[in-house]
Image 1: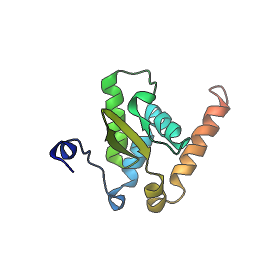
Image 2 (image 1 turned 120 degrees about the vertical axis):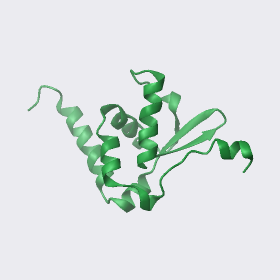
Image 3 (image 1 turned 30 degrees about the vertical axis):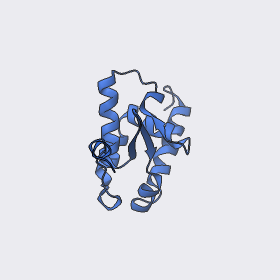
Length: 117
């Protein structure tokens, strides 16, 4: 790794350092949950610019940082793009079934609509 690559490396928690409260906090925000749902729908990594979010660039950066620091996503630089991948295997090994349950609940809630009780 070159000095430049090292400077661009982003800090991520190891799998064993991922905390339940951090994951739940990260996924409690509707914007971050929508990012995770989009990442879960593909096996590919997606650039931050692939997401169309109705917030400022600095707020978008904040949301991705929360997801990365909680261990929900892994971010790497590819050229000038910051690529994002869902840490599905790490989350499954730490908290079996949690991510799938949250994604299923989010889809169910979305399909139910705002007027359903």
